[in-house]
Image 1 (cartoon, chains in turn green, red):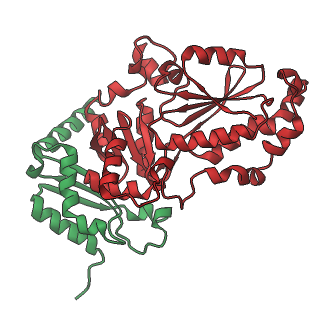
Image 2 (image 1 turned 90 degrees about the horizontal axis):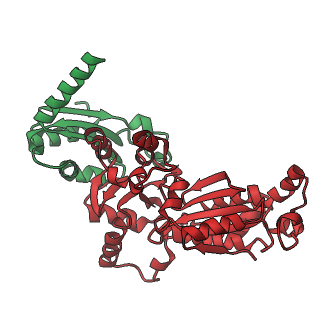
Image 3 (image 1 turned 90 degrees about the vertical axis):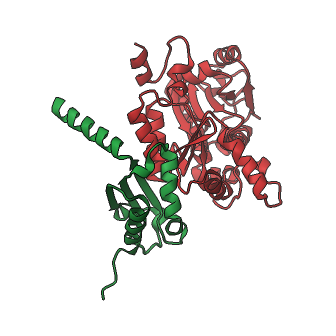
Length: 112
Length: 299
């Protein structure tokens, strides 16, 4: 059986899905954009920098820092580990916020 | 030998500047007493000053940026430490942040080797511009040495990567306990109304996300203090725990964590008044020389 080439990403998806039951979950691996940076010298991992877009009811009535902390807590081990996740960009929305943003974007593109 | 003079009031600043002999290079240093990198820079500057004779056409002036807000605004100071090199009323160069080598290079550019250059430009010997006779040879020995020689004198005052603490007063010798560290952090996050804990400095960011955050704040004209977490590993690791936040940059407002780049960007997008009360333009009641975007708002 073939081993996954993206164990970190897989773990992220599983954890985030189970914890937040998200209506939207996008995980982008931006590691290649930072591979040449000084901080990454000596690193062999290809899964160091991620960008996550996640929509879930679980974020309702929580401020952004609190939402991000929920995600950080979930991925604590992956982030603390040597050679684990070095950077994590997050976009955390509730379904209502996602809808509002979509409408705003559509309105803007119509007016443009 | 020359020394770093503290200028306490705006009136003092005005009279000091006007009383400077023409062609004097004024090294104006904006600082805030609570900012750890400023203590380092103060040491660097007074040491640098002492390497020049008193007769040098140089004035090292130290200004508390928060107590002299009009002057800070006049020079568009949004982060400290900030150094302005000025001659005959016009700004030659500015150095933002706590890079000692950069400051020394800037001063030497205009005051070290500069003295010979001035003579040829103006056709006047340096002696004419000061009350005491200038000593060009002394300039060349101390101030105008090439980078490699000059570095020996002052590089020891710049924080090296091995130095454990940025602020001398905190290195008590014994290892800090966690309580002490957390107490220090509690003060540090309140050090300025808006505090950015970043990798590197606004003028020399060491990380793309830190760079974006500091330039976003600069773009919005926000007045903020910054702390380079790469220069202090205790703060770097301690703050992650204290804030319950694993990444940098971190923006703190009023002693509360707002978040990292993502959150700061979103706040600016969603809320046009985000941090508006901390911008340069809002600090004054009357209009005045301010950042271009502020001028556009008040026009």
